[in-house]
Structures are given as C-alpha cells and as structure tokens.
Image (cartoon, rainbow over all chains, first blue to last red; front, side, top):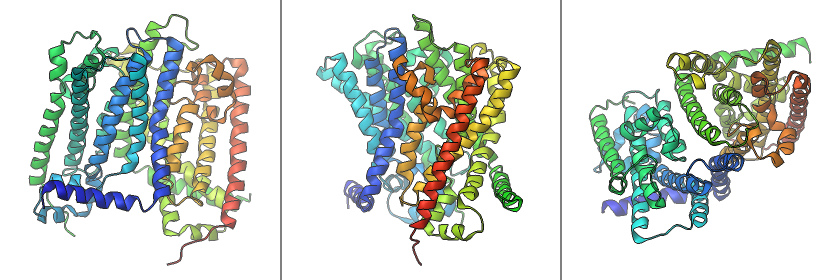
Length: 267
Length: 276
C-alpha cells in the first residue's frame, strides 16, 4: 500500500471514530470556536477605544490574525499524535510497537489522530480573515495569492516543526513539556499582531532564533501591499516563508536523533 | 453545619492541597508561560497607549498591575476542570461520593478550593518575584508592578482576593454540576471559560471596553474575578467605593453558591449510574 493511501486510511479510522459521538463533537467544536475566538473581542475593543495602531488598522490585524489561526488549526489537527506523544507513547512504552512496524516512525505518529474539533479555531480564523480582506478591498493578483499560500504553508510547517520538537524532547523528559507551550501558543498569540509593534529584543528573538516572524509577518506584509515599517524588501518577503520549511526539516532531523536515543521503559 | 462536619471539609481541602503542592516543575513551566503572556500583553497595550489621542480611562500603571496580577493569579480562574472529578463521572464512581455522610456540595467545594488555590500559590512567588523585582533588575522599569496604592487598598485587596477565590469555586461548582447531564464536559468547559475570560477582564482590562458597554460590564457577576481586586490594588477604585465593590463581590458569591446548591440537589435526584 502506498504511503498516501495508508495515511488516508489512518485519517478515515480517526474521523469515523469521532463521528460516533456527533453531539459531543459539535459541542467541542463550538467550544473551540468560542474559546479561541474571544481574543477577537479584545482586539476589536482596543481598536474601538484607541483608533488605528500607527499604520495598522483593525482590518490589517484581521488578516494577520486570521491567517495564523487557520494555519495553526490545520497544523494542530495533523500533528496531534506528536502533541501527546510523550504522555502516551513514551511513558507507557507503546513506542516499541511503532518501532517494529515497516513504516517510518514520524509517519506513523502523524497518523495517530486527527481531532476534527479544531475546525472551531479554523472557522473563527477564516471569518476574521474574510472580514479583513473584504474591508481592505485587497488587490488579489496571482502573485499575492501565491505569496499568501506560501505564508500559510510556511506557518503550517513552522508550527508542525515546533510540535515535533516538543515530542522529541519527551525522549529525555516527560516533565518539562509545558515550556514548549510558551513557543507554540505564545507564538500564535504573538503573531496575531504585526511584529513591528513589539520591542526590538522580542522581535529579534522571533525572527532569528524562532523564525516565526519570517513565516507570519514578512510575507503577509507583502500580501497587504504596504510598505514595511521594518524596511524589508519584496525579495526578502518572498524568501522568508522558506524558513518555516527549513525549521520543519531541522526538527525532523532532531526527531531522528531522538529516536536513535530512545530506550524503552519496558512493560 | 456542625464542628465535626466542618473539620472533615477542612481535612478534604488540606489533603488535596498538600497533594497538589507536589507539582512544582509544572508550576515553574506554567509561570514561565504566564510571564511571556504578560510581556506580550504589555507590549500590545503599550503600543496602543502610545498612539492614544484622548486620555484612556485607566493609567498605564494600573494596566501594568492588572496584567501582572492577572498572569500571577490566572490559575485561580475557573478555566478547567479537576481531572479526578471528570474521571469519577466517566467511571461511575461518583455514586460513592453521594454515599458519604457529607453534603456533596460542600465536599466538592472543599476539593475544588484546594484544586484552585494550591497551583496558584506555587505560581505566585516566582510570578511576583518577576513582576516586582527581576523586571527592575533587567532594566525594564516601565513594566515593573508598583506596590498597592495605599494601606487601605492593600487591606481591601486581601479581602477582595478572598472573595475572588470563593466566587471562582462557586462558579466552578456549576460547571462540575453540569457533568451530571453531559458525558463529555470538554466542550462545556471551553465554552464557559471563553465567556469568563472576556467578562472578568483577562482578555483586556474591562475599563478599556467601549463606554456604552460599561454599565453592563459593571453589573455582570464575573467582575468579581479579576476586575474588582486588581483595580483595588492599583487604586483605580477610590477609597470611598471600596465597600460597595466588596459588597458586590460578596453578593455575587452568595448568589452563585445558592444556584450551585440548588443545581446539585436537582442533579442528584435524577442521576442514573452505569453498572458494571
């Protein structure tokens, strides 16, 4: 069986299982929609009271906010297996079974679970994004669409890479994982606003150490077609999303390294 | 309530409390996340304050207090559910809980009280150390949390935090009771947490909301959670309004305890436990 067909089968099983409890799924998805959507109320209230944030209007923020929430929701759905890897697979020793199977470990972990209720976050992100795009009346040239898709893919790979990093750390410790939330959820939170409003040290950290700004800020500035207050060039804005993919590859290498150092807990 | 009964509730709370104090690493990781969140919030709010054309309804100092107290005391808010309690409902062992010679409401109230306060206590010390001292040492003076506005405010703040805890547990008891009707409580918890976060001021301080919303925000119950105690600390609530605000907190707490007792009584009458 080809890898793609097998992955489709993994997804089918997970989705059918979740659809056994439709009411529960609906309530959970709605809960996600509300819980992740309350941030919007805060952003709206701030713009209502203070007016525009320099060159940034509420609609600009909506485009940043919507894109990062949609991309994170998709990455989060497809990487759930990595998210709870430490607390289940490593702690119980179940990872041994994965190692025995004739497919790559990362592939099998990715196929563990696809929590569909993440659609709640995706939907609220999409609505906010639509508001931003319609208000700004953006010029959607082919180039802008391509650049937006690259930003989206960059963010997807970036967040996926972060979750693989977190899972890999659990080969050494199942305790300290909460620290990674700081980068995952903190990253989502931070990139809802344009990078230019933050302090220098913060901006540098999220550009050079953790390349979140490269995937979430620079290409979106290009899509919005405004002059970047940080002075990035169009060339850089097109190149930047690749950092997400590089980050993803590095995290996969780290994963391979972790797997080689895995010692089973036994049964 | 007799003294013996009271002693058993205290015992329940203190046992849970001491168990939960074990999770020190989790608390450190947790407060690291909250500190990051606090810095992020201050940068965003600071950016808005810089461009403000009309004077905002709250000084930036009061905002700094609001943000840091919010991050340090975040775990006091009813944002999640005791996993042990959830498991009781799933396995059906909740029936044993009802056999005990204690009031179910006050038994779970004591449990939940410990569940809320122990993690908060663990996070409070490193959190305050950062907000009061470390920030000053690393030269980020504009974000250092000031001390309480006055002695009177400090005293009122202490009382107000007490009411905040009671209100939080009383509200949590409503969520707990909802598990009698819902097998999967996660959706319900997310839903209620979302509303609570907005209405208590965790998302943004309530005074920053539009003026036409202020009368509603003033009278809704969730102000008892963050808005009242935090604004007492910073002196944003003047001395002559302290008593009325504490009374408001007290009133809402009693009302939610009343609703909780009624709800739990009704739930117990119609509970069907799975066999097995």
